[in-house]
Image (cartoon, rainbow, N blue to C red; front, side):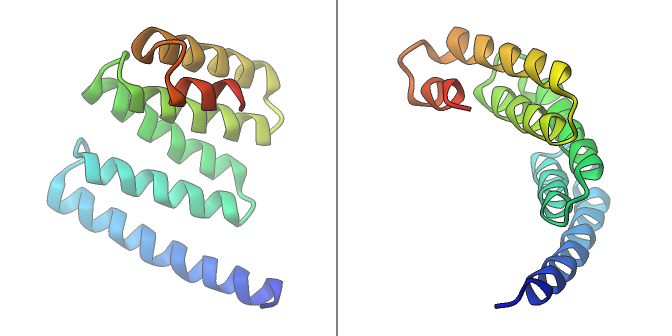
Length: 125
């Protein structure tokens, strides 16, 4: 498959993902877990298209949602911090990325423990 075919497919997928986000926001509200998942999906599509700033913006929205709804000490909050850190690094915001990565690792160690598989995965990223 050529790069142009993959790019067109991703653009089409982004259109569907944005429509799904709109529907979920209207039907479920801004603070529903499925709406938050849609934010992340749209962000991933922007990342695949090389728009790292939009990807970061959407990841930040999901991260804020997880902190508000699940709390600061939830494993999924650490995962969303990981995504924000990775997207920050992709934009060259290394200092901010390191701060976020340290925070999410500390959170994983505290919540899951040093020997948990998700903590080990975070150590490797």
